[in-house]
Image 1 (spheres, one colour):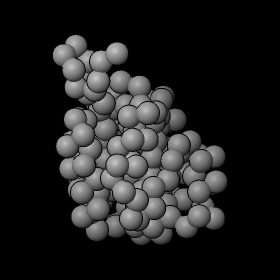
Image 2: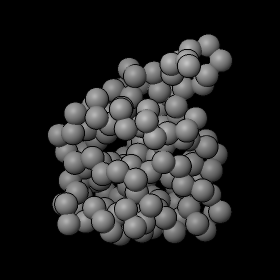
Image 3: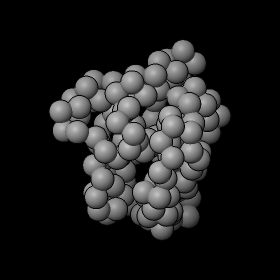
Image 4: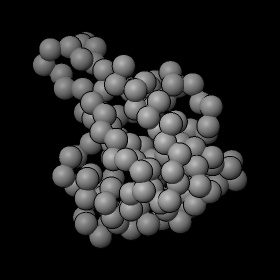
Length: 138
């Protein structure tokens, strides 16, 4: 069995996005760097993206993983809009993860929307990398 990055196997493609008016992206950029250091092909969409913008990027790029970084407290409405934007475009959601300031009480609601894992602030990078390597299907 070959390891990620071996000749003949493409790297896992990850799209990281910051939805809404949240202007704090140091954590998102740090996660991007950790994923890149782990051999993944990472696209960061930048600040203040709409779910519709991100859905278009997913349609165009076909990433294996969608990672949303949300610190604003608007994770539930933004993820509902994200799901609707994907459905409106007929785009199948890739492995969907969310990181940030997410209260435990909201994790089940996010999972019902299709989020596979929530990574709270302070999650070790190795945990995120390990989950993606285990669950993503390039």
